[in-house]
Image 1: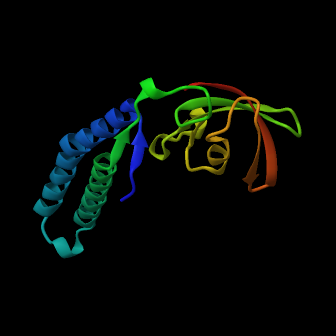
Image 2: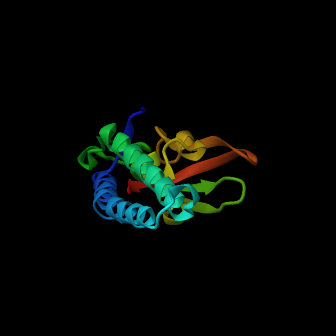
Length: 157
């Protein structure tokens, strides 16, 4: 399993999710299985099959989350700076062609959320920006082709 970089906040959220799934969802599914079993013939019992399937999916999700946090490396925010683009920086970029300005925060893949303008560090845009400085013009290959962006601001996300 690959190492995942997370903020302290992201790590805490994943741990809370695991606790919720184990302490709330797992007992709910166990009750559903018990209730379905009490209804008799299991070979024709769709409720039992559905509950068992839900149990399998839940256990898989818990296992994946535990693997994720077991291989997580917490990013130390005190070491962040704005000399060059790095993970957890908020970056304002200007499309050289049309002048449009966009702002993204580069985050760990597990914390990406496009609605919040948080892009995963593994995305082409983030990869094209990482390591560059204020004023640099970078060429980034996107599905539409090659685009040029000027880095107009770097701040702590």
